[in-house]
Length: 148
Image 1 (cartoon, rainbow, N blue to C red):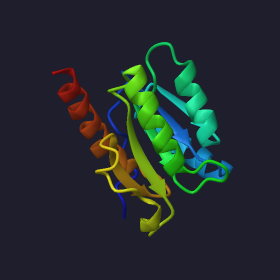
Image 2: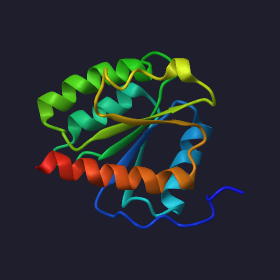
Image 3: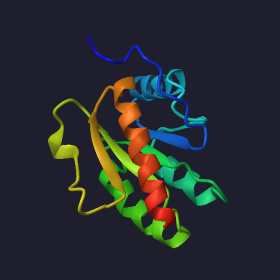
Image 4: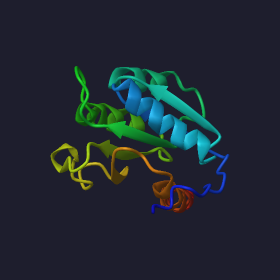
């Protein structure tokens, strides 16, 4: 039995963005995040370009965490990371981090974390409630470190 049955403590001080071209995967990840009360707001993007546009138009308070599918058509998750690294630096989005979501066993989809220090974890799909408590604690710790 997994630990998906418990609720994650609410962390209403940040929002997340789920980026996935597969409508079913996008819906499931967003549902898990909302049902778990992990965050205040869940945003959705169906492509890397849509996600980048969201960040470009964000005046304040960009999402703190991005759940990123790596295998997307047109612009892949890897392409998103290249563009987002530049945008993150230019806009000062130091408190925005990325979690890679990939198909089970999709190790080839995962970039080395050393290439992008803001990539804090890699998870297999589907997203599970049990992953969220650890991610929430990690994100809170990273945000405190960035504030120092």
